[in-house]
Amino acid sequence: MSYRIIKEKLAAKESILLDGGIGTEVLRRGIRWRQHGIEDAPDVIRNIHVDYLEAGVDVLTTHTFNLTKRNFINFFRDAEHMSLIGPVGLPTKAMELCHAAVSLAKEALAQTGKAETIPLAGSIGPVMHLFRPDLSPSKDDCLTHHSECVEILSDCGVDFIFFEGMNNTRETQAALQAAAGFDLPVWMSFVPGMDGNLLNGESLSDAADLARGNGAEAVLVSAGTIPMITKSLPNIINGSPCGAKAIIGRYSPPSWKPDFYPRFEDTDEVSPEKYAKEVNNWLDQGVQIVGGSSGTTPEHIRAVRGIIG
Image 1 (cartoon, one colour):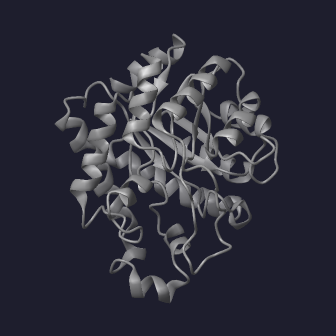
Image 2 (image 1 turned 90 degrees about the horizontal axis):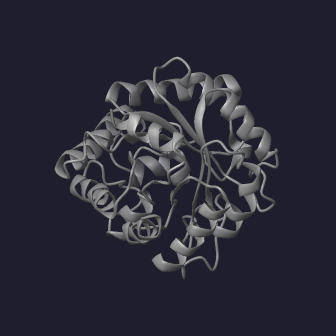
Image 3 (image 1 turned 90 degrees about the vertical axis):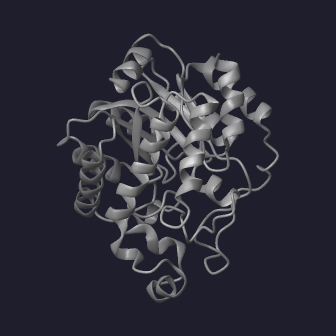
C-alpha cells in the first residue's frame, strides 16, 4: 500500500522527499567506517532512520548500499588487510547483514508509526564502486551479482528496488534485467561526470532512456557535487519522474588507497539552508524527487521538507 501512495504522488506531479546520507551519517555519529554499524551499533542505524522519518521523508532507504561480498574489498588494501582490521568473517556476511539492515529500517518505520504510509526502498549500489566505472565487470558478471542482490532484498520485503550510483550502461542493462524477474517497482540513479554525462563519459540522456525503456519508474542523478548534479539535470528531465540528490562534505579516501577514490573539495560548507535553496532550484527545473547523497544529514532533509511543504 505504501508504494501505491508514492505512485499516486508521481502521477500527480507532487514532490517526493527521499532521505539523505546513511553511511556518512553513521561515521558522523562515531562508528568507524570499517565497522558499518549493523552488527555492533544497530541502535545508531535505527536512530538514523528514525531521524530521517521525523524529518519528513516520503521514502525510507535501507542501509544496504555497498553491502555486498564483492565491494567490501574496496574499503581495504587487499584481502589480507580486510581480514586483519575488518569485522570477523566479513566476506561471507553480505546476506546476513542485508537482512539485518532491512530489519532495522522496518523497526524504525514501526517505531514512528509509518510502516503503512512510507515505502521502503531497497538500495543496491554498483558491483564495484560508484566512482570507478573502469572496475565494472562483464555484463554477465553484473547480472549474476545484481540478481542475487535483488533476490535478497525481495525476500526481505522491501517495497521497491533502488539501484543507486550506476556509472555505465553495461551494468545498467544488467541491473534492469536482474530486476525484471521480480514483481517490484524499480528506480535508478546515475553518477554524473563534470560534463553532465555519465561518469564514464557515456551519454546520460541515453542511459536515462535505457532505464525508462526497461522498466525504471523514476530516474535520478546522485553522488555528484551540487554543480555536477545541476549540470546533469537537462539530460534526465523529460516530463517523466526524475530526481536529484547531491554529495556534500569533504570526501577523502582511506590513507592506504590514495588514488582509488576522488576527493571532493570545498563542499563542506553547505548548510541545510543552502542545500535546500539548491534543491529548490532543481524543483523549479522540473525535478520531482529530491533527497541527499553522502554528507547530507537529517537536518539537511528537514530543511528541504521546509521548502517542499
